Image (tube, rainbow, N blue to C red; front, side, top):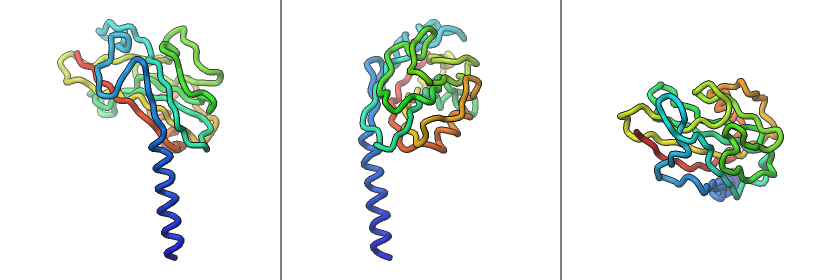
Length: 181
C-alpha cells in the first residue's frame, strides 16, 4: 500500500515538473506589461491595430497531440469574462505563430480552427475595456492537449471551446498582459 501511494505521489510530481517546463513567450507582449496599440481592438470605440501577437512555446509534454490558444479577459463586466481569441487543432509539430497569424488575412497552420470571439467574429479581437475601468488582464494561453482534434468549428463559442479544452488539457502556459483606457 505504501509503495502504491509513494508511486502515485512521484508520478504526480513528475507530471507537475513536466508542466513547469512548458513555457509561452512572445516578441510582442510580456508578462505584467501593457499591451501595445497593435493588440487593441478596432471598433467598439477602440482604435487599435487588432493584430494578434507573435507567440512561441517550448517544453510541451511528450504526449501532446495538438495545441490550442486562447486570449481571455476575466475582468470584462459581463459576469463571464470576454473571449478575445480561440484557436484549436493546431498540430503538435507547430511551436509558434507569427504576429498577425490570427488577424484578418493572417496565415494559420493547416487544420487550425478559430472559434468565435465575444465580438461575434472569428479571429483575433484585441483589447477594448470600457473607458474608466481599471486596467483589464488579458490572458494569452497555449494549451497542450491529449487529443489531435477537438470537434470545434468556426461557430463555436468561447465557452464551448473552454469546456473542450478543460476536458482535454495536459498542460498550459500563459502570459498575462494588461490594458486600460
